Image (tube, rainbow, N blue to C red; front, top):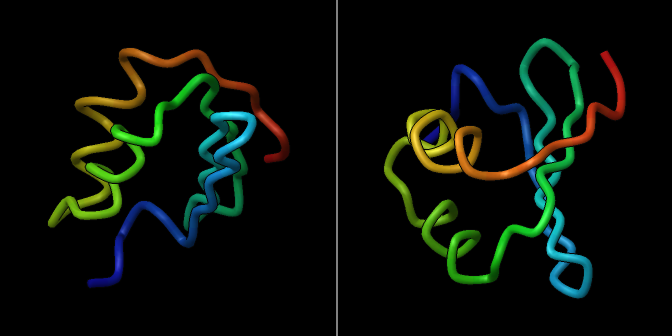
Length: 66
């Protein structure tokens, strides 16, 4: 199901980095995201809700671009 918030995402398992590219074009890396959390994110019905409720409050991030 397409997301109104997320354009696409990728996960670097070795570095535990979840990269989110938002519909706005902004790119953020969420740091120290475990494989378990990534798997839950992938299987979430609404990735935007999961991102807002689970990932954003718990993980540090790095803004890559606007």
